[in-house]
Amino acid sequence: MPKVVFVMDSKGVVELMQSAEMQAIVTSAANSVVAQAENISGGLEFEAKTGISGDRAAATVRTASPHAYYSTMKHNTLEKALRGTKV
Image (cartoon, rainbow, N blue to C red; front, side, top):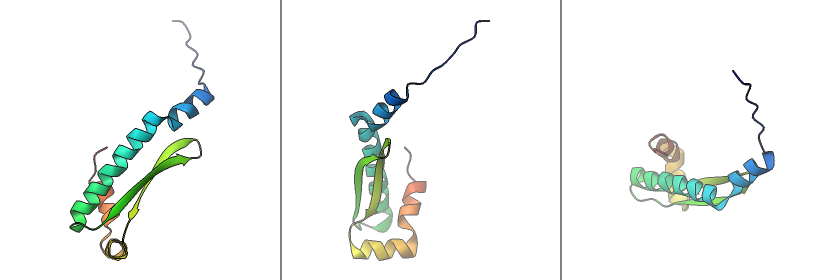
């Protein structure tokens, strides 16, 4: 059986992880979490922000109003939204 050698191109992987396509995938997942959180909380405001963090695309979801913040602190809304989201 021939021996297969796999050499990963690190620069290519970084380019892939920072690409617009990967940012679109991450944005889609974050928007799904936002929708789930708004559904759980009864319409409180949440927002998603996508960007490059280190070598890869990343997204954050956070509350967009003080009422949503305190409700999330009390009821763990974002935690529940993450568990209930299929990506």
